[in-house]
Image (cartoon, rainbow, N blue to C red):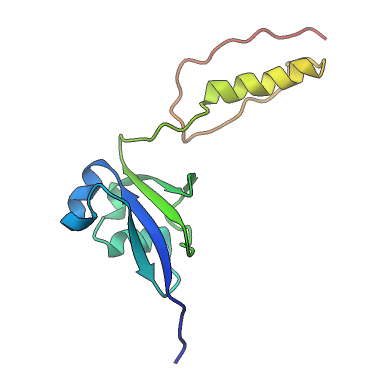
Length: 133
């Protein structure tokens, strides 16, 4: 018989996803033990939360999809639709920083691709001056 080592991941569910959990696990971080390798989706569903109710999963602060394998020591945050954490820096700050580095190097910003991040909702795009080079 093959023995798998016991591993742990810390989970935290937000907003109405807590309704699917036992009272002792609601609105708090808790350790979840597992032996067999599993995806984030499998772990979430094993706790009684339907994966169709989940909109965003962060593993150690990084967005992942449902097929991401759970590893020992992961901190997993699970968010429902319409509830997103504040994830600084925002798109505009990233674009501004990227274009500032180009300006400091003495190059033109023309032709520089914007940072694409479909996980962050679009807001009004700021206009930055373009240096003529």
